[in-house]
Length: 366
Ligand SMILES: *Cc1c(COP(=O)(O)O)cnc(C)c1O
Image (cartoon, rainbow, N blue to C red; front, side, top):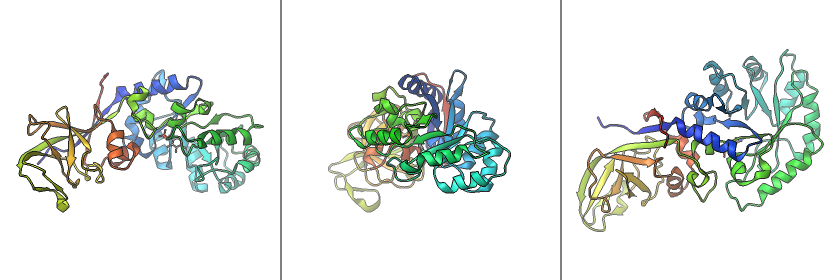
């Protein structure tokens, strides 16, 4: 049996990145976004790493009720915000039982809260749609929705306000400024805590920081922007995805490598085979030329990614040995670089790590 792929998770890097958020938004409280199993890093692991005494997140944000309940069951007592709120009375009951905070983004949720006879107090964030056009109350309907919510017996006043940025991955995009302006305008007569910024807002738009910031990707060490890497913002990568070189083959000029045979050796050359594939979460759409770090040297991917293996061109690294450690992304090779070669984003790579990958915690103060 071949040694499988490993995802190393560096707990110190979480702590470092959380400090980076504090430095970037010193006047704001931090709602650490740990949805989707902590962006693929492991929900409990991430929540622990972000609850370390003084250097702790002030709240957690998750997408699903199950994720929030899981955190409570594992003993986390911090505020946990359900970013998509609740769907019906049954979910609202669970929300109150676990003292979760909810985002209200639609009138149907206000109706349920108004009708509720539950004797509990729920902290509510009212989400305004300022341009994402996915979830949220229309800007002009915001003051009325806010008043209705504050009048609900079950709602703890004053209801907080939030919006979500649609284009913060591009620092040149004028729409972010427009969203902030619209949010400020439609909430100007309301006295309440506010939250706008995701990672892109935190690092790119000082005016979005507000009472609460909601960092996600930057906690995991990646840049939220489409043209740089986490290191450019003083962030450290948390996940290093590793595998092993299991074969080196002397291929001949014209040999077609892998499925479909669409990559052919231009000359006689050494080809390395690595025990990682899309069955582990390596992106199938990674193009030939995607860098792969074999025993400290970046070499190009060749041929198609298969379920359990990838191949690399070892012409520039003739000293590679069978058994050498290979880094797919992480230390020395930003996930953002791999993502751009695969037509995706680092968020997607992290969330794609599969069950069979062994996850290992390390404490490294690099
Ligand atoms: C996912 C999410 C975030 C975090 O976004 P990043 O780009 O990862 O920083 C913040 N707010 C909401 C509502 C989200 O859904």
